[in-house]
Length: 57
Image (cartoon, rainbow, N blue to C red; front, side, top):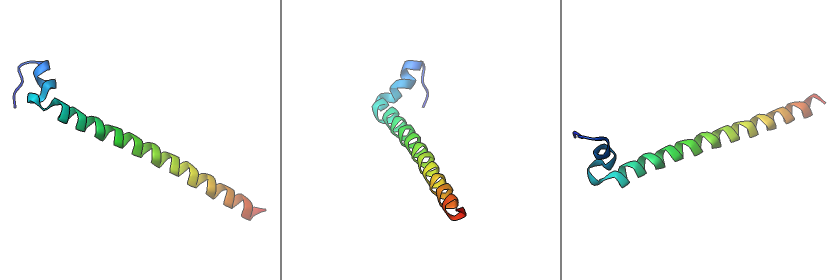
């Protein structure tokens, strides 16, 4: 596909809502997934530290 202007590119041949919506949904899911993984990692490390401290006492 060839576009003659930036507005034609962003219109995506009439499929802009689907194309950009898909990109947006994918970016949102990837962001949420990385935040959830970070949160789970912190939780696991916190639990491991508390277990280690309780075993050393």
